[in-house]
Length: 283
Image 1: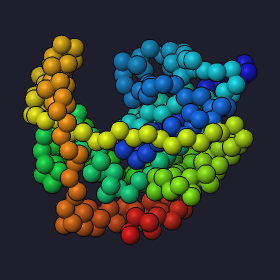
Image 2: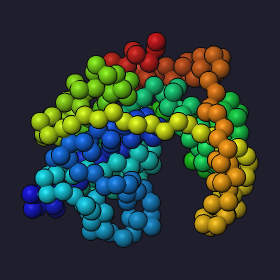
Image 3: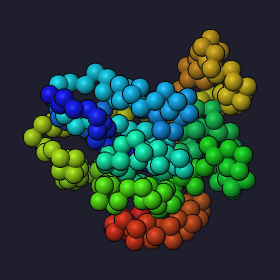
Image 4: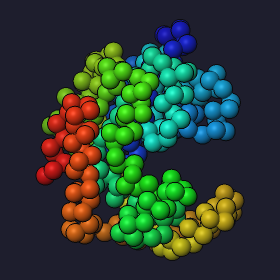
């Protein structure tokens, strides 16, 4: 059993949202030497949690840890896009390893939009949301579907505090290939200081995407703060998800082409920054 927990956490999965961090979390939880908390901790990005102090954070991260688990990490996928987070992590745990999951930015942007739409946080069509993004994020960074897919800028922020040798990058597209995920995970285990000897693979069970029946009701509920009231929330969820709507539609070819063009130069900068072949995103 690990006795010294002063250097907790050993690693943090900082991003990116809707890039497969939950899939990675699923695999890591099947490794007996690795422990991660049940939920995202949101210590470094939420003021109300950060104010509770690092001891509170350490207890949250270590909660329900098995004796055999000597490597401790956490995943909060929103850490990647906030300016203050890298500095806070470095100040409190400068030795921690930083894990990134990268996904084709076009696909990540689309998935991000539909995630927010399902939650009732987004009401515009995808095309309108993308067109209006720059103006919208001046008031609320929550609507940065496209902006959060510019990976190199977010990684650069962390490089101001952590060396590249302390970071590890995983391609979502590699991780989900049945014939390749063993190799991807084995390399990560080595980076974390363990092996696949204690790992048992199990396929991740994904829930089918379900969209709200009346998204405007969820949107208004969020805007007015009603969604935080349990009774109102239950009514809204029952109204919207009792009769399941089909999943989100395919992106139009024209929009896909525009986004692919938009991200092209950003992807080239990312390739140079992390020295990784990203040509799979051009296919």
